[in-house]
Structure formats: structure tokens, C-alpha cells
Image (cartoon, rainbow over all chains, first blue to last red; front, side, top):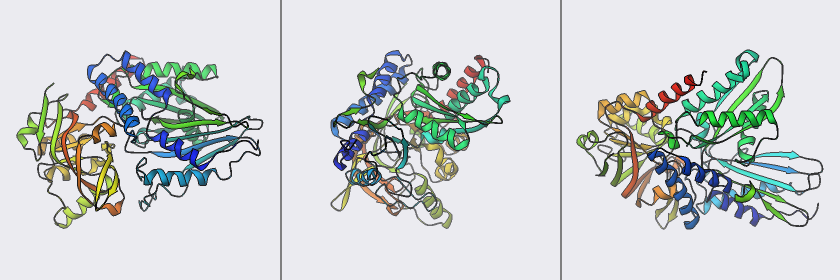
Length: 298
Length: 194
């Protein structure tokens, strides 16, 4: 595994590209949404969003002024070079901030002091996953906007409140989307974390929406069916792009599950805005680099 | 759906012409203000001290730019709207200070609706996440106050031309697109049998 290498320059370029575009899978879904959208003002909104992405790429500027909050998932096998990764990413965040690709938006949670270089305790949030036998090192970084966070909901459900055929869970998701309206910058994607205790459900919700391709199918048939049903139902609510009405409310629903205690069912509904700034790479021992979330993958 | 080209500062008569769904382009000076700038404004207003900029007839943009230092001044890279609900606690104060237009995203709530009717104001929805397109309407950064609160939280003074389009989503008569959309959404949930 010693062939796996990640240079500082690679990380800078991945973050730079990640913040001046949106991932290709989401561009595909946005274009499909525009083809289907019937409300004129919603069509204008979607077209403006797609035009803005094109302008950002052409002019080498950030798609959105807010870089959101960075979380990085690292999946690796024993012996892979993950030790210096956090420091590389921290330094690259500072460099991309100085160059205007990232607005300095990270503050101390209580004093609200902004150091000006996107640094701070726990930034970026690193999520390491040791996967024995994994033939590559996978790095997925997500810059998720924080307006979306303002619509999130965490609830400890129970056997009774889950309801018959999960009607209570489905109602919670639909009501959360209506209440949030335009706040999470729709068309959104929903990450839904279910299980464990509150902390587990919350982490799963973010991992589901940030690390999966928004066009993929959940390998668990129960969750796949639930994702399909919820996506269909949410898009009947009429919230629309920017929350001002339309057919396109949500581009994807991604659910992650863990078992829980018989007394509870923790659920977190986690919004992602349409501006999916992220990158994913798999680096193999022979030096091959595979990029995730690409146009032709599905 | 009318299209309006307004020059700042605007008058009550300008605001009364705006109806839900209309599009608006702005010329003149626009001030950004997010959470911390609103706190600073409140602190000065409560002490009876002058504000750093004249807000009568103005447009306040819920936004923080990506700006790059350029000699003694600043150059805009991009700018777009932030979530307006966080500024809801300042609804009446902002109306009392004479702000006529609020530009943001996601809309505002009942206190703002009341203020919009009392002080003749309107809310303009900017395309969320479209910071390059929106930034193209900014001609120059004329100054910044309270930069010690961080780049997003300063009050940036922007000279704008053909700035928009923004969509009127809350008017001065108590109408709100967001209320209508939420009511329809709740009906849809009920129709699904939940």
C-alpha cells in the first residue's frame, strides 16, 4: 500500500475545483429537473442556478459566497498514509481562503471570533473509517452550506410515533420540508439518519447525503423503497426552487440506518442545498486516481 | 408580473408599486448586513448614536461577500444571499430606521410582515447559491464597517447597477409567497392522508 500518495498540491487543486463547481451527479439532476419543471418562475430559478455554475467554472470563482462547513471522510486500510492528511487539508483551506475560493466563514462557536483563514477547533471535521482489505484510499470532502442546517430536525421517535407503515416517520420528513420552505436553498437533497442514539443518527444523516452519489440506489431494499417513496412525496409538496413554488423541491433522498435500542428510534433529517460542493477520490497503490460523482457513473 | 428598475434611495411610492412575482433591478448603493451588523445597528440605535450609513430609503442585502484586498480598497469576488430568518428579531427596528427593501433568501415571518405593512417595505428573493451571477451587478465596493467581526459579518457598501433580477416575494400589504407555499404544502400532506 506504500504506493498510495496524496500530495499537498493535489489537495489544494481538489478543494479549488470543489468550491468553484458542483459535483457532476448533481448537475445531471439539475438539468433533468429543468426539463421536467412546469412552473415558469421555477424554470427561471433552475436556469439561473445552472447558468451560475457555468459562470463560476468559466471565471474560476466560487459558485456560492458561503463555503459552508467542511467535513472529510477518509476510508482506508492499515498502512495507508492518512497521518498527515488533516494538516494538508487545513493548510489547503487557508490557501484557498487567501485566494478567494473560500470566504473566511469559520468562527469560534461562542465568542464568534473569526480568525480569517477558515481554521478552528475541529475544522475540518475528519471522519476516519478503517476498512480492512480496502484496495484504495478514499477521500470525500464536502462543503455543505449552513442555511440548509437551519431547516434540520432531530427527533427521538418511538415504536408508537414511527406509526403503521412508518407513516409517522414519513409525516415527520414531509412536515420538516414544508416548514423549512426556501431556507435550505432548494432544490435540496435530504440525508436521513436513522438509529443508534442521537449522535449516531445525526452523523449518518450527513454521511448519507454527502458521500453518496445522488443518483445511486440504496443496496438495502427497505431503505431503497423508502428513499423512492419519500422523494416522490416531497416533490408533490410544491415548495419549489428557492422555496417560491414549483415541482422541483428535492433532488435526492439518502437514508442511512443503524440498529437502535428497543425503546427508541432516533431520526435526523439533514438538508443539503443544491450547491453540492464536494469531491471524492479513490487512490490506488499503482497511482491510479478514480474520481467519484462523475457524469457517466449512473 | 411587472419588471421594475429602481434607483436607491427609494420612496414609499416605489414600494407600493411592487406586487408578488414582480422582478426588480436596482441601481445605487446597497448595504450588506447579517447577524453581527444587525447587532451593531441595534446597539447604536439603542444608545441614540448615529449609524455609519444613512438607512432611510435604503436596500439592505442579507449577505456577506467574498472580497479580495486590492491596494487600499477591496475588490468583489462574489456575493449572494444568506438565510433571512436569522434577522427576523430585528424586523421592527429595521423598518423604523427607514430601510425599504430587504434582499435575501428563504423569506421572513410574521414580525416582518407586520413591519412591512407598518413602514412600507418589501422583501426581494435573490437566487440562492448564485453568487457569481448576482455579483456581476456590483460595480464597486465603496467601503466596509465592522470588519473586525469578520468578512461575512461586516457592513459592506456596494455600488450596484442593474443589480438583480430579484423577485418580490413579500409586499407591503401583508402578502407572502412563503406563507402561500407553506399553506399549499400542508394541504398536500393532508391530501396524502397523513
